[in-house]
Image 1 (cartoon, rainbow, N blue to C red):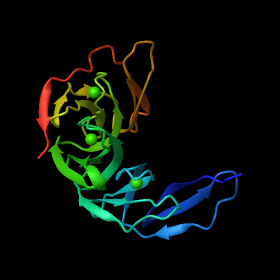
Image 2: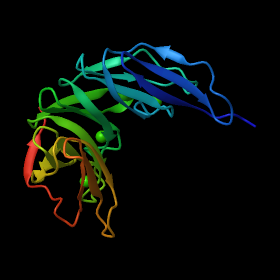
Image 3: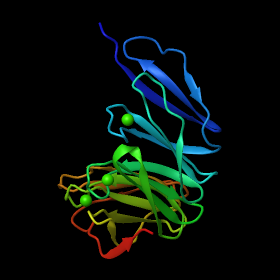
Image 4: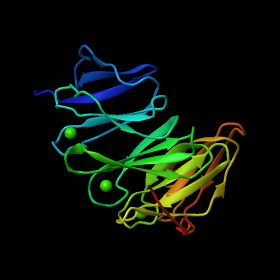
Length: 229
Ligand SMILES: [Ca+2]
Ligand SMILES: [Ca+2]
Ligand SMILES: [Ca+2]
């Protein structure tokens, strides 16, 4: 039977270890590739449209996102980097301008910014920064208003709040109200938690040892317009 190969990436403190995995068989010897200095989060997608999965990883210390392109055989290219804000705690993917190309977003707790990398053809990204203040700590991407353009919710760990941003084809975000949650929210997930159509949110609050459920009953609507620079 023909074996299927795909890439799985594991984050280490001072580098990234890429492991080529063989379905239905044992792991083969790992391919190690040193990247960055204090990696926090990675995502995979086919950024350059060649049919092979690629990897992006955020480095909170060097303020960079590294992008490496897969060859379908478990190997990654030398990293290309993009400058982002300080102390990235989360990295997610979506299509925030609805052009069909995967975009990336980083929550930078150290300087209160979001870095959004809009994908272009060939796997090249265009970076914009949005200053939202506080300590952005985690991001959940979904289509909260069901217009087929990705939106995202971001936690503010120092402000004990969540704000939802709605993507648009002209790359101008609409922001919803600041929603209070528990103390020091550090993770957030988007899923259906009730029987209504909209995607809801669950927030893990580290210091209050609570989980906050935000039900999307139509209140997840944009009211402020924010554009990255
Ligand atoms: Ca690719
Ligand atoms: Ca896009
Ligand atoms: Ca949307």
